[in-house]
Length: 78
Image 1 (spheres, helix red, strand yellow):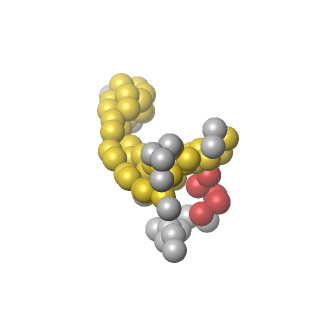
Image 2 (cartoon, helix red, strand yellow):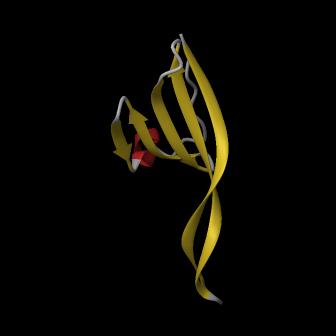
Image 3 (cartoon, one colour):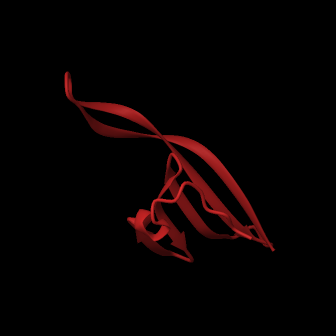
C-alpha cells in the first residue's frame, strides 16, 4: 500500500525575456511524493506544469524524463 501526495512550490530561475533580457523569477513547480505504509518516501516526481522533469525511485534519479511519456497530456496509474 502506498500514499501519493502532490504539492506546489516555487523555485528561483533565470529566464530570458526578449524585451528586458535575462531576469530572475519564481517558477511554480509541483512535486509528487509516494510513501510506503511506514511513511518512508519511495519515489518522487518533479513537474513543470504537467510535464515531468525528473523521477527519483529509491535514491536513483532519472532526469530529462519528458520523452519517456512521449509528450502525453496526462499519466494514469492503475
